[in-house]
Length: 114
Image 1: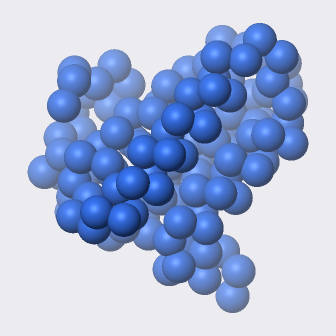
Image 2 (image 1 turned 60 degrees about the vertical axis):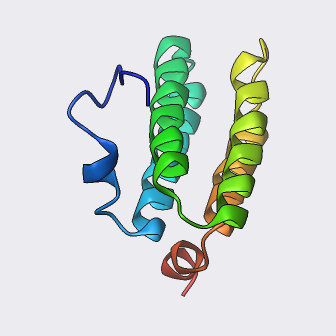
């Protein structure tokens, strides 16, 4: 695991104490922050939100014991990377990414959609 820029005190051991649904929801929260920063036209904050989401996503991948889930998280990371690198972001893409990460965990989805 690389040295984290935004979550300096967060280790894989600490991260693994959170449930899978909590981990997914924290990643989704960063994407929601990215959407809000994008709507405020704050490009630097949008970029940092994506980077924080990457850190949490990488931690989640590193502690995931479920091979299939890890594969889906890696695929999600690739899509997130494409969106991060795009010069022209679109709020609908950020919203779709947020929904997609939540769909990866049944409990996270059920918490937000009772």
